[in-house]
Each structure stands twice: as C-alpha cells, then as structure tokens.
Length: 130
Image (cartoon, rainbow, N blue to C red):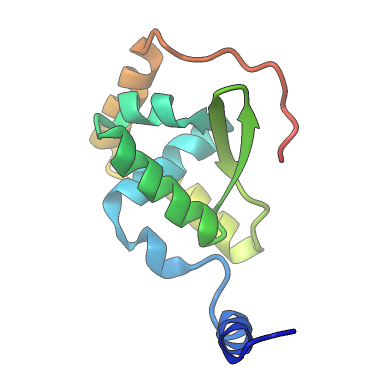
C-alpha cells in the first residue's frame, strides 16, 4: 500500500531530470566524476588520497552522486568501488566534458598524480557491478 508521501515522491521523481544535474554544481563532485570517468572505477580511499579530502566528506559526495543517478557502486570485501552509471546521452556528454576539460586541468592533473602515488590502492578481483 502506498502512502501519500510515497505517491508524492514518485510523482516528483518523474518530473525531475535523471541524473540530477544540480548535484554537479559543486566542484568536488565534478572532480569526482572526472576522476572516475578517467579510471573506470575508484574506491573511497583512492578518492580521499586523490582529492586530499576527508573520508566522511568524500563518502557523502559519493552517496549524493549515487542517489542522484550519476554513479553505481559495487562492494568487494571491505571496499566499495564506484563507476559512472549507465547514463542518457546528454549526461554522458557532460561527464566526458568534465573529464576532458570541464574540471580545471591543474586541479585534475594534481589529483591524478596523487592517485598514481597512492600506495594503498586496493587490488580489484571482480569487475561485475552490484
């Protein structure tokens, strides 16, 4: 049985754009999307190292991007790996634009260098997504 709140939530969701474009107004989220698009998938610890941000902050950004339709996640042991979700063509163009210049090149280059130097990168055993 659906409550009035459930019905309202579903109706509102059908009127909003998926993925939620408003979520990428924040620069850290744009950088996260650009990094993940460049590396196929990354886990929280890799993003913490690349962005030099706190783990709770990065996790919150990832949760918002996942809930907003930008990212998919899979668990492997204690790690959660994030990848770009299957997106409509307009959103794929946005992610590609972020990866190829929509994020300031100096900032993305520095984040990629920190990620490459990060010695705690987990090994990936599986590529299937949950």
